[in-house]
Amino acid sequence: MNDRHDVVQNLEATPVQSGLRLWWLGGPSYALKSPSSIVYVDPYHSGPRADDPQGFIRAIPNYVLPQDINRADLVLSTHDHTDHCDPTTINPIAERTQSLFAVAPSSAALMRGWGFDMDRARTMTPGSTLQHGDITLSAFPSNDWEDEDAAIFVLEADGKTVLIGGDTLYTETLADIGRRYKIDLAVLALARNRRDIIDKPLYLTPEELAQAARDLGAKRVLPIHWDIWLAWQEDPHQVLPHLKDSSVELVILAQGDSLAV
Ligand SMILES: [Zn+2]
Image (cartoon, rainbow, N blue to C red; front, side, top):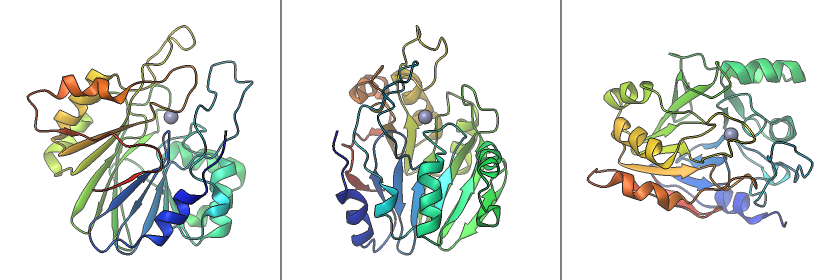
């Protein structure tokens, strides 16, 4: 499997004159660029993990290689699972950049355990808001399958608003967020994981993802995370029938591609 070194180079080189542009970095990871900030969300670089007994074997190349990153202004971690809070990704980004790290309470606890310099981190408890450069970030409680201190983030920059779902399952919090914000793009984790391996849903089903996007009143929804694990992969087009008669537009990206929010 070949890593792709051109995506981070491309996003660093591409100016964003207004609003926000999103680059999908495969799996749970993406970057958002505003006129004056680069924000990484759950950056995850990994080896193939070919020995993983639960099927968490990477099925796609790495699109975010920490050694390629020259600039990051803010790095987010939505929860403490390895694919969202990975020391072999986060530590080199901290060394190579001046970035601040805005992280869920569970991620903060994990990073403290690595000996991470927490002067460079902000713990985003539910209800908290951070202003950093041209980015406003607000935290809400997630409904992660395992992590009780996971976060959902709302990121606002230059008149655009993105819902950063992490791995949240369906939760009424999303309707509350929809009443408070005009969401331009909701980014949510999609996949029906193999229940003979872990007998709990880990991500949203196509139907639940569509319902979450409707509850948010999102203009557009981008399913991610459906591609990364070899034991289960999902077709994001499966979401489309569940958005019939709604005003939500389904966006499907290829890994490494970008879109204007
Ligand atoms: Zn995940």
